[in-house]
Image (cartoon, rainbow, N blue to C red; front, side):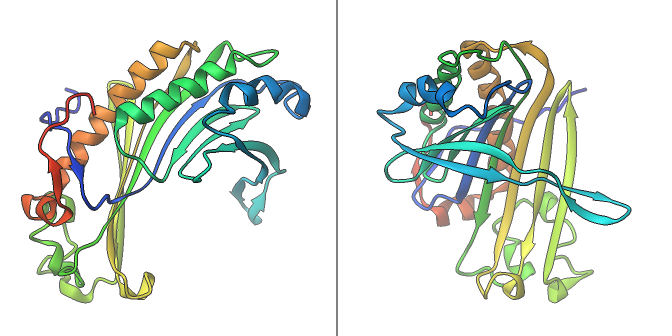
Length: 262
């Protein structure tokens, strides 16, 4: 039996706990990516909404018998909105959308569709993808939640587990758990935990980091990519909402109970 989460209504909160939302489409490496001129058509497709362009270097780290080693740097191009709240990132093997000002999924999905469509402007656009993922990072804070036990009224007790329980009490200064779920080929990684004052400059919070993705080869097609992303969003959204209590929702400030197509 696959993951069976009760359907939750779409909600918007006055205090948005989302710190970052990411969507990423990975594909076989594009040859000649380092040639800047080949990226001009991609830039032109995004210029009206994402006019700010910046070249960046990414470094990956691996752990081996000798310790932590850095792999060669890879170039990426970041196309940002003027306010910096959203970025489309293009590398030789992926395109991604990052948002720190996330509002609704429909708006986010529209921007992701645009990023995928812009790939078609490249001299040799990717024909197949290898991985598609969607990730939501939430930092929950509450003025009455300073110690682990303070979170009991605000979060699902199944999520909290030992944190804030009688066995460990308020001696917990930090606790992070990772749960990997395989729902009929769709992977969902749940990272959650309490970060106390020692780790947060006296601003404790509870992390709910939800990463949903699937791997495998398929054609890069806009409608299919957005449909899959919508499926990921539904799984992540339901799990997040089931992690909160009504008391936490009330504290965040519910803008509206249901938002069709949000």
